Image (cartoon, rainbow, N blue to C red):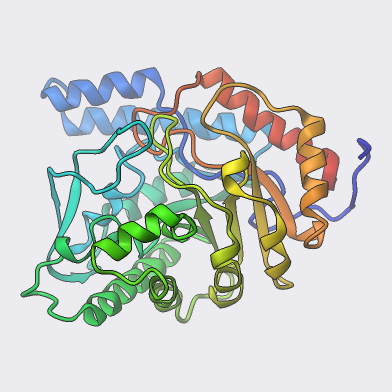
Length: 376
């Protein structure tokens, strides 16, 4: 592959040719402020002022390197998923084994319990989005990321749902889908036109060990993908035409560790052809992710953002290798339907992955440069 552009049709709407998943390594001032706030030596207003200032600097850095889809780096969150879901009606955060242990035995001592009917009656992240919306430049698009609806079930299953509230699981799935539908429209009403659902359970369902885990706890791994797809469909019912929805799939990301392995073949047709979304951020940074063959199921009009650059280490990828892999992926779908990004966020939790901030930015710069040379 040469360095000349393959096409002269740059993307003007998301997902963009050079894009990012969402989270970024927390800055030192933010970490220090969070510690002081937790210790009670920094009040809420002062803490928010630090968050706002650090997010503005983060936005400026993203725009300076040429990214178009701009996030707040999830700087106000401790976790990519819990922080959103625990603010839904009927959901309570508890200290407990989350049921998801990463390779090496690393676990998270937090979980969620369903103690009432799941619903959406407002959310603090709507205000978080508004700050991002008002801080970006005129040529940027504010991108909001939230966990997908399946994550409220996948982590803990039936045992984390009070039987008296939901004697039948069908009612739970329906309520979650409806709550998410209200959330999607609330973000839209706040001005969001680029919303990402981090619904990583679909990638986990490609792992035989994860499927056995589901079976052992009483779920049917053969049926669960359709249930989760139904929740996404409910969440996006009557989606506004000018709202771009993407899904992110990965196999776990906590302090550079992972949970699952396996290619996308088992869920590719369902994923690409039943989900009412516009694009997919998919992990392909190593052999655990399988090959690009599942891209043959991608229909016209949808895009896949190839997660070829790893967020788990600071080793910088070769631009030639990235171009070679993009070319390989284009054997299974039109290159016009492809984009480039990291395989996951750099800090799915506030601890972040094991790389330096400078290494993170070099990777994002590489993505922008490579995309520009490939697509123009």
